[in-house]
Length: 263
Ligand code: PGA
Image (cartoon, rainbow, N blue to C red; front, side, top):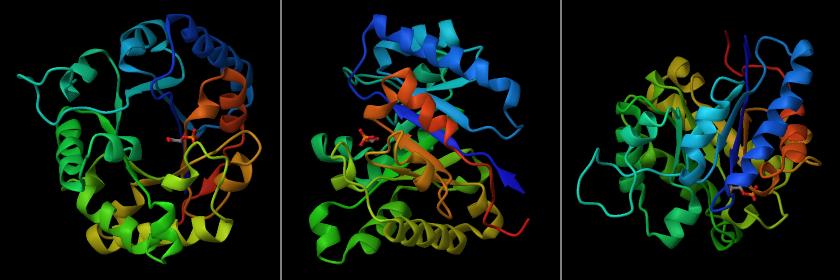
């Protein structure tokens, strides 16, 4: 069975109101292409800063792009200054949220346990969730990459994950914003291992429902090769998602792949 890929743009702390024009431009490029788009075209998602999320949804929410936030709190409301809850994100009309990005793990001290609680809360609020995992350079250099990432996956995934629309983004910390990407073999090995763990945790069918994305220095030049690798179900894109042209090139590079399970 063919499975559509997820192409997710993470704008991070970038973008002012004028930059919504990039989404307008992307939307135009997508509509020009849509005559030739097969049924299972990629699922396109943009996660702008939350300051732009409401406007993005109201201007472009009817088009072929889904919208999400870059983080959420694990509670619905309360005395949590500066935080945004999953139900607030949902209330804006957005459908997705990223949790556990390495920049949050590092700069805000987020743990797997907290990320799991956030993911659980987001799913309960009816959002689709993208959970990020990834090893540091020193963890990879000391041969710990698989162990670290699999333990993050295990501890960050919420219960019943296979019943939801959920993705895991494998993002080596050393590849984010650096222009360096792992070798094909390293990506294949990690994605296969994550897939194997999901099967162990939830069985073939539920594991197959989880998309495993690659993130870290994906750009218009390397997207096609990365997205064609086995068990790569899409990409989480930072810098190259900020401009319509480069993000569109990545979307256009997404292949239609047979899913790797036996249906
Ligand atoms: P990058 O960021 O594409 O700029 O490397 C990816 C991410 O951090 O999600």
